[in-house]
Image (cartoon, rainbow over all chains, first blue to last red; front, side, top):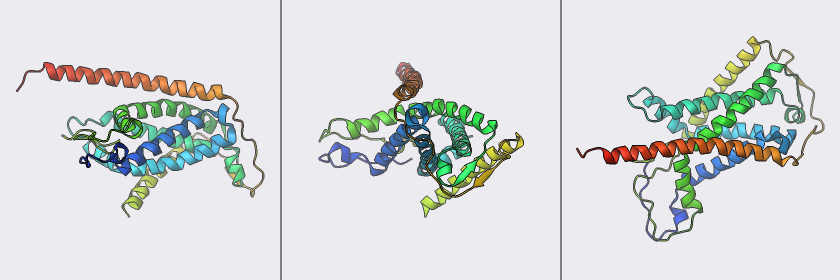
Length: 185
Length: 90
């Protein structure tokens, strides 16, 4: 758990948000937008859908790496009595598995991106069905994954996007990690 | 260095899931034709930023699911606060 202390009173509100929190917020927001676009195949067309999907696959590796601390910490505490994040841990594990299978099956049924890279694929119906099923599951899991952190998102969004209050203090017990505990215990 | 270690762990984890997925596909008799490398050519089918209804439907679905989860979470939070207030002082 990392708790950041209050910064000097005169600092503008936006500067009080730690750089890592800003990175998490904007990177995750970009991921959500990219995912929403990639899911809307009729809007983007196949080429953008496939390249976005590949980009999202790489971005997810970075997302998971940035939150690896939370993964390790929560996994260690998983079997402890009253583990608070057990449900979220299971949700995130399901999302990781489903999203990985979605990207994998997407690569295997690719018609444009791999073609442009000089690779031709002849997928069977298994991978087409897999991509169809996992993409629907990811829509549900991604939405839940975002929604369970709504308090962190609202808190950071208020600080980043809300009106600047020169004298406002962030207050105690405010964590900089979306995966971390929001309150000191 | 720490980032590289974490990235390696993530790659290992994702690699295991990919391997299991491929094994599942293989066991189901999928992908027997495999990949064919032929060299880089043209661009294939592509861009059509036209059907905005598809995008709107995706956003609506996401918003609906998020609203349900956030409402449940907010109600539970409120109940917990009420219960804490109602509990006698130790």
